[in-house]
Length: 226
Image (spheres, rainbow, N blue to C red):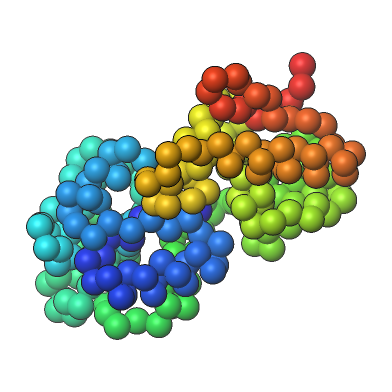
């Protein structure tokens, strides 16, 4: 799951982002209204954690723009404003939840999971593709029932491929999904090749088919062999 945290308080942002990364989320951070707006135009997020008071704008106005543009990301407002009027305004403008600072990080995590359950009430939390299965709760991936020994990045990469099966994915898109903001200052994303190579080898060594096709000059495509 990919999360955008819109929070201008640097220490709090580091704390929240660090916790979510430990819980196996991809978490990007925007400290201003304009930075958040740009990221929401360029990228897709499952959940947006949105502070109201930003140095260059109001989080409620960003929420209005989100909904006007048809962005269907779930939104949890995180704010020090505890007044009922603020909560009612946020929820009426399209937020899915509202949590008041300070809050325990496990509570925030529980609210994220609850929102995603409501969005996909029939979801069984297991992804399948051909002979591959991926349990989204335990993060265990298997080929024909055989457990794969994957690193966290390889697991996230496999989930990303399955979610985007049949689509061409550039190396830049894969790097941005797996490493988030850390790729902004990189001159090259050639390291993606090694992660794809390792994942491909582990799947085929376990008796699975090679579902990863290289699209030369662009990136990769994940689909069943013809």
